[in-house]
Image (tube, rainbow, N blue to C red; front, side, top):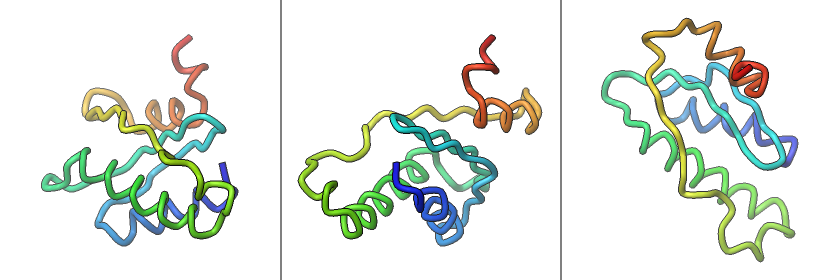
Length: 100
């Protein structure tokens, strides 16, 4: 993934009333831990994040313009009320270790 993706995700969050708490950008997936108020929906966060980043990345990187799909339509959203923020941050930063 492009090096500016993390900054772009933070900008999208700031422009759309949710807070990017932690993120992990890997070559084949992205984990984002966001804080959203009670009116925000996971679908809106996913659509806004993928839509804006897709547009910007395609404009900046010619090699991505020929790709019909940049992001998968799949995402996982889960409330973190039953686990600590520290646990979620650890998972986002090192997902394979958290599952062990």
